[in-house]
Image (tube, rainbow, N blue to C red):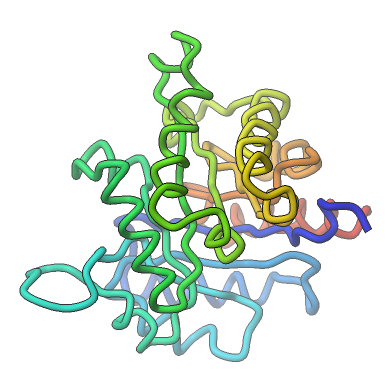
Length: 261
C-alpha cells in the first residue's frame, strides 16, 4: 500500500457565514442522498456555530463528519462570545478548523494564537485542521515556502510533531480563496510536497501519514487533477460546498480517485 493509499481522501465543506435552518436541512438532505452508499473517501462539513446541533442530529449514523470553523484557545471562563472545545464535543463534533486565512486577516489571529487553538482542540479530542497559506504578494515575492513554514513551525513549537499525528493540514493560497483563481495541480502539489518534507525532518512516519488538503476554488472540474497528485489528500471547499450539486460533483471526483476509476 502506498503512502497516499494510507491517507483517505477527505472532502470538507467550510460553509463560512452562510446558512439558515431550511438551507442546512436541504443541503444535508441533498448530500446524503447523493453520496455513494459506501464512500471510498471521507466527508465533513463545517457549519456556523448555531447550526452545529442541527447538523449533529441530521448526520447521525451517516458517513458525514462535522466540526466548527474555529474555537477558543481557552477551555472556559469570562470570554464573551467564544465557544470552547468542550462545548463542541458536547454536540458530538469531532473536528475544527484553526487558523483559516479569514480568521488571521479579518480577526487578527496570530501564529501563536492559532497554535494555542490547535492545542486546545487536541485537549478536547477534536481533530484540528490547520489552515496555512500565502497572499498573492507573498507568492509573487517568492515567499510561499517561508510563510507556510512560519505558520506550521509556530504550531510545532507549541505542541510538537507527535500532535500532528492527530491533525490535518489544509493548504489554502489566500489569492485563490473565493476569487475563482486556482493554483494549478502542479503548483499545489509543490507546496504540499514542501509541507510534507518540512514535517518529515521531524518524523518521517507522521509526515507520510498526515492528510494535507488543498483549498482555493476547488470545483468538480478541477478536483480530479488536484486529488490525483501524490501529496494532495482532498480539499477544503468553500463556495462549492454551499449547494448539493456542486459539492457532490467534487465528491464524485474524489470517489473516482479513491477507487482508481
